Image 1 (cartoon, protein in one colour):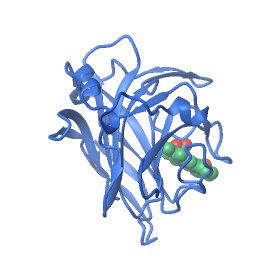
Image 2: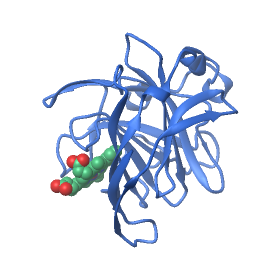
Image 3: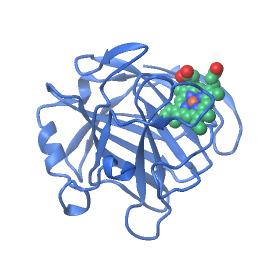
Length: 226
Ligand code: HEM
């Protein structure tokens, strides 16, 4: 699949990348979840799991990010504006939640993207950090279907789609809050993601058997915006 973008790396050496990258099936042993996964040249992995068929817009999104990055986001519509943005960062907290997702939508290029209440996220097991990486695993309702002034988009039946990403080495100003402001990215790019291999008849059990912190799915994006 085609990937292109400007890569600056954390070492701040920028280059234009245009190469073939392919999402592949990724089975995560600890959770039992099967994803369509891609690891970009900057070392960031984006993983999507989808229901085989569903009337609602639902997806599991996992992002695994080298610690040198302050934030990284996924644009579900393949560009910055008028589509759901799942922006992630490490909280830097010594205990408790180590990484979070922030639901945003941008309506222009000159401001921090707004909170987006059309998508809600429930954290799943696999939201953590270690010495080298931080990662967020979430169940999103509203990421695969949206309506904006650009029109209506529905990824639930598509076999592939264009995604975009953006990352920065600079952490948001208030890392423990998902309403924090953050600076413009140093890197962004696009690729075509295979959604057919993301679909699985066991999707509902992927969600129900992987509660965050072993309790009910209790930490929701809604609460962060309350
Ligand atoms: C403070 C926050 C942000 C600012 C100020 C910002 C600003 C910008 C600017 C000025 C451009 C260049 C536009 C052009 O080439 O004409 C751009 C492009 C882009 N941004 Fe952002 N951005 C922000 C956050 C984000 C986030 C959170 C994402 C995704 C999760 C994102 C994804 C992209 C992408 C994919 C592009 C490439 C062009 C496009 O898709 O239209 N940006 N951004």
